[in-house]
Image 1: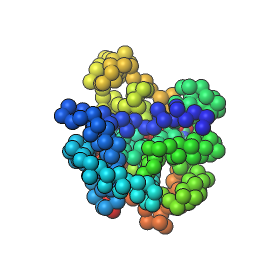
Image 2: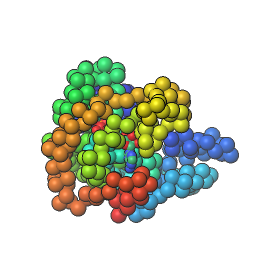
Image 3: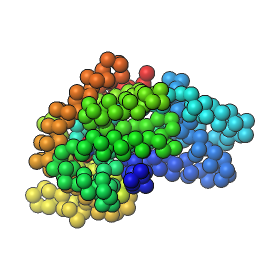
Image 4: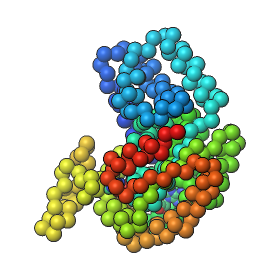
Length: 315
Ligand code: AP5
């Protein structure tokens, strides 16, 4: 539990988005808003369990915005506690090389299903920023594009999935990254009768990734990700060579400066891709016999990728 609070903040991006959207209705009483907010993940979980995994965000919101009468609320609470007590958790792995789109599509899956996205990369970056013991150990390795030790990341995940918001399931992004991590995950899940439910592999050829990684800019606080070509911030201006002027790279929502990750360089990417192919890809073979690995063509526009991700998540 060395840096649980940092990890909580770092849970990739927008669990708060659905909460923000849910709380926007001015027509409800505070108590029904609270009830709706508490119950929203269970609507999603129940829907998933009964096979309608293509629940849209809008549908999710409109369900939650319906007034929740006391009978209905009691029934939902009863069902949600049944899920929490008896149903195995939904555990998804978003799999893919650096720049495949895990951070782009993960928050949308999070919003769709109402379960949190846990990014070991974000957690480690938060630890580096806070200069915790783990952060100090991870800093240089990460900058060079290497892998942090299995012990550290397994420990982080072990602690994080015990948190309340993971009760009905979670989305793993960037974990497991080695066979040893996959086996450690299987063991910790087996202890509670659960196992990995689905692995969604975002498949992109290596040659596409350098442009994606080297063109990425990030808003550090929120994790919002931009790309100079594919998803530029509104404020971006280019110099006479056609390169973005760094001072004009600002977050669309807060107008705060964007940054580039220290490992988002062509040199570090070579190492990141080498460990992806050498150590991470064998994990697909590990889960393949369970029939849970679904491949998505992530070498297309973001709308097309998202459509395929929805297909992969469906039963
Ligand atoms: P981590 O943060 O996990 O990095 P990564 O796996 O290299 O993944 P990225 O975040 O770079 O890629 P992404 O798939 O999220 O891409 P995005 O959606 O932003 O890990 C960082 C480091 O932490 C590791 O190197 C390691 O040191 C350490 N670490 C983490 N977990 C570890 C573990 N389990 N064990 C050991 N060490 C660990 O997309 C990239 C860009 O492309 C964006 O700008 C986006 O706008 C753009 N884009 C996305 N999709 C498209 C599209 N379809 N078309 C055009 N552009 C697109």
